[in-house]
Image (cartoon, rainbow, N blue to C red):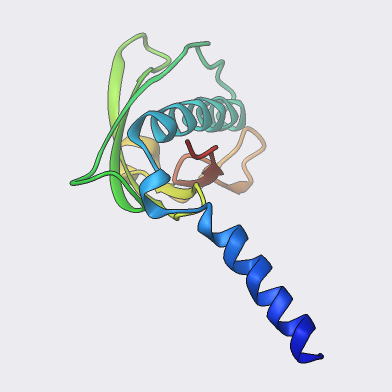
Amino acid sequence: MRPTAALAAAALLAVILSGCSANDVTAAGLENAVGTTFARMYALQQTDLGHTAARADPAAACTQGSAGAGAWTCTVHYPFPDGHVEGVALEVEVQPIGCYTATAPASLVGAQRIRDTRGRLVTNPLFAFDGCFALR
């Protein structure tokens, strides 16, 4: 690569990356994304188990020492099949680009592998899930 082309590529990369900051991650953006994804993964899990999932708009509350990327805790309040509403605390690792991985305690969402209605072992979609959201 020519020095001029390499310099131009480096400058372009710097401009692109300058728009992303760990501080662009906010609780509000994360709460909406985690709550919505949890609801979808819960519905998928219930289908695998042969149950009908209640349709609901889950409320999520996410906290961290300070806004930004890193480790967060998000509690999602969701109605379960028997009608009770449970707060499920998720450990959420957030990247500066707005993508995350959420993991839930097996004691509340089941093991990593569960048996579906056919008796096959399938991955439990609630055990861990990934998602992304728009930064502010």
